[in-house]
Structures are given as C-alpha cells and as structure tokens.
Image (cartoon, rainbow, N blue to C red; front, side):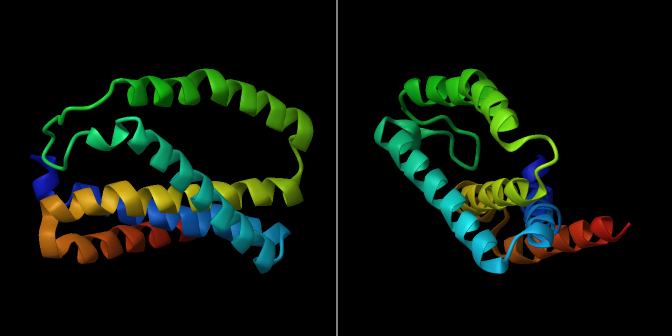
Length: 155
C-alpha cells in the first residue's frame, strides 16, 4: 500500500515547496509583499468558503484516509466536476482576455491567490489524511518532500 510508505506526506511537502518556490517566489518578483500576502489570504478564504459550502451540501462525507467511502451526496462531486470543467474554461478565457499573456504584475497576484487556495486545501484535506495513515512520521515526511522540492528548484 503506497500510503504506508509516506507518499501522501511526501507529496504534501512537494506541493508546499511548489507553492513556496514557484508561486510565491515568482509573485514577489513583480509585487510587494503586502499585495502577495493579501492575495494568499484571499485565495485561502475563497477555498475555505467553497469547501464549507460543499460540506453543507454533503461533500463532508467523502472518503476517509483509508479509502472507505462514507454516505454522502453525489452533488458535491457533480459541483466539483462542473467547476473543474465548464466554469474553469470560461474563467481561463476571461482571465486571458483581461490580464493578457505577459501581465507580470497582475499574473503575480493570480499566482499568490492560487498559492493561498492550495495551502488551505493542503491543510484542510491532505494533512489530516496523511496523519491518519502515517502517524508521527507525517511531519518528517512533509519536510523531506519540502527539501526535495527545494533541491529541484535549485536545479
């Protein structure tokens, strides 16, 4: 079983590194720290509200860390699929039209927003699941993944 080897926690560390070295670091090249921090918080807030709304609609009854499916509403899956497919295409087209392909300053704010949403998702969903499977090794495995991400960003 892959979870027994800490792949979940290693993946979390890699994602945290990606947020740090790819999204935040890039955003700070074009925007002030205060703007980047505000957008990180905004991304986290939007994710939190969306997650809360999904949970109220039955999305909180998703699979647990061992893979067992709990009772739940299939509407959360439908909503996630719609947001991922139909709405994301429209948002991408609108974003391209409004921000332009070479908009470093505005693109930096979008990257910071995405970083905040990703960090909130990691904290809300992946970390608790990793700890449920990997126990006390979770922290060390997350840091190992982060270190690998740091090494990869330096290459």
